Structure formats: C-alpha cells, structure tokens
Amino acid sequence: MTKSWSMPPGKAQRVRPGFDLAAVDASSTPGWEHGRSSAESKLEADGNRLSEVQERLYAHGRTGGSRAVLLVLQGMDTAGKGGIVRHVLGMVDPQGVQLHSFGVPTERERSQHYLQRIREALPAGGRIGVFDRSHYEDVLVVRVNELVPREVWEPRYDEINAFEREVVDSGTVIVKVMLHISQQEQKARLRERLERPDKYWKFNPKDVDERAKWPAYQEAYQAVLDRTSTEHAPWHVVPADSKWYARLAVGALVLAAVESLDLDWPPADFDVEAETARLDAQPF
Image 1: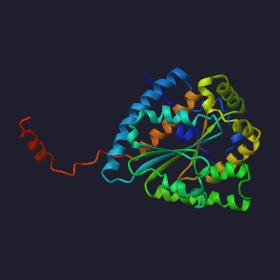
Image 2 (image 1 turned 90 degrees about the vertical axis):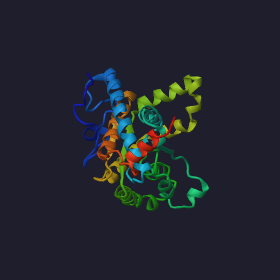
Image 3 (image 1 turned 45 degrees about the horizontal axis):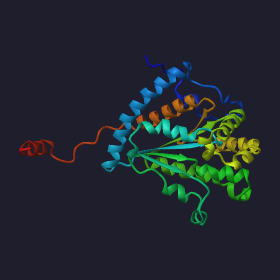
C-alpha cells in the first residue's frame, strides 16, 4: 500500500511571515515519516498520476487553452536542480515540458531589462515550464557579488512580485521551490565530483570560491523569501540533503499545481459520428 504524507507538501514547506531559513534542518523530511523506500513507491505513484493530468494539460494547450504551470527552481550549487528535472519531469511526456536554464546573461540580454529574457522563456499554454535558476538570480548572485549597486537591485523585489502577478493572471500557476542544502552536504557533493572522472564535467572551480560567500547567500535568500513569497506565488523551501525527499516533495508540489487546474479532456471540434462513419466506410 502506498504511504501518504502526514502533512501535504504545499503546507509543510510553504514560506509564511516570520519564516527563518537558518532554522530549517536541511536533512529533515517535513511531512514525510515513512523513509526512503516508501518515498520511492510514492514518487512512482505520483508520477503515474502526473503523467495523466499533464496529458490533459497538453491537450488543453493543443486546442487553444492558455493554462500552464511554471516550476521555478533555486538553490545553492549541487542542491539537486538537475536531478529534480530528470526524476520528476522525466515521468511526463517531454512534448509538454519547456525547460530553460538561465546562465550568465548574453550581451544582448544585458542590453535589455533583466526580466525580458524571463518573459521570452515563459511556458506556452498547455505546458509545464521549468526554470533551472531564474529571475531570482538578479537579487541573489547580483546582490552577493555586487554586480550592480544596491539602488539597482533593491527595487527588483517589487518588480518581480508585479511580474509574477501578471503571469498568474494570464493563467499560469507558479510553483517556486528553494532546494535547501547544508554546507556539509554541499562539500561532500563537490568532493564526489573531484573523486569521480565521470563527474569532472560537473565541477567548476568557481563553486569552491562561492562557498566562501555562504553567509551572504543565506542572507540574500532570506530576503528573497521575506519579500517575494506572496499569496499568488508563494515560496516553498524543500530540505535537499536527502535527494529522494527533495524529489518526492517537488513532485508532489508539481502534481498539486497541475491538478489545481481541474481540466477536463477538450471536446471534439468535429462531428464524431460522421467521422466514425467515414472511417468505417473505407475498405481497409
């Protein structure tokens, strides 16, 4: 029998007023009390359900619908964003998924408003969009590394809130997830990349330098959670030291988002009986 959550992920990890990131145990599994084996069974069951409702969403988009879901993934290096994409979104039809990874802005992107490249990557109707990093880099990396003055990045919190309000009003459900990893676990994952030749490609020497800025990043993330967790687009902080738990929790959040659309199969835009008769009339 598939085990259940003691508290739904949407409630267990949701950021509310007074939330303290430093108080979150990155190795904890809030809302799940059944261990890894049961979690894997639950993830498989949720994946089957997600595949079903995602097909309805995709059909909705193919027939002109505008509803969509956007998963925003943020987290420190090695937090597991790529694993979430592979293990959670890998369970659905790839035709219905739009993945975008945001790196350092190109010269063209730097000449535009910082939200322009985000607008261009928003999921079309019927799709589940995934942002591997996002517009929040412009109040995280930019802030920590002082790439622009404070008077430039400070107003961006309100700009982002207004932008997300616009996206939600257009018919897209936004699921924002911060994968919260501990310094100790991050070090272990970086070391693994240095010990395995098949992981060298994932290692960037700059990641070691960024670890020295850990307190500044935690402060920046706290500001993001304080100022941009809204009713229309709340943040969820998912402890990520246990990869299996993070995948289970994010999968449940995405499933709940797609189910919240409550979509039926689109009706036929043709005469079903007439087309059936035409088909049956063919000799082969």
